[in-house]
Amino acid sequence: MFQYSSKSLFSGVKEQYKLGFLFLAFAVAFLLQDVFLLFCLFAVLLALLAIAGYRDFFGLFIGLVPFLVLADIGFIIFLSDTNIDLFHLTISSNLRIFCLFTATAFFTFSTDVFALIKLFDKMHFPEEICLPVYVLFRFLPEIEHDLVEIAGIQKIRGISKRKPVLYIKSVMVPLLFTVLQKSDDLAIAYFLRKKREQDYLK
Image (cartoon, rainbow, N blue to C red; front, side):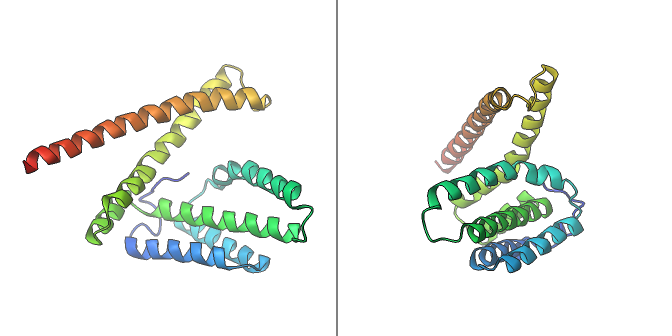
């Protein structure tokens, strides 16, 4: 889902332009209040993602829909006694999140993380910013891959989405352990790298 592809039509565009486009898309999505304009922005971002060569739209949005449904139910429960237009609020909020999600997918699909880190180094960004970005871009696709593998294993065991509570527990617990293991490995590697740098400076 959020994985770089060198086959993207926009992979050859300079990283600073793509980063600027991402910030611009985020700013416009947050500033727009009109539902029709938000829908137009979402359509433009979706078209750009399709032009770039992305095809797994079902996989991109299927995990987002349950979260939005829960958020909409929360709006209805907690804001029903207010004078807020809940229909406009839910539609605009959902479209805004879809816009942010699509812009992020376009950026990650078209941007090489190593080129992005080089850009950050040239711009003298602090390591506190570069490291989380690298981790996010580098390991999120691996976590997605692990999620698919774990779900496939549970399907073989006969645990399907027809039993949602058991399915979520059977998928999320192994995934959590996998993520913790990867984070431990990453932390150890980073610690050793910093230690080598300190020893070299001595």
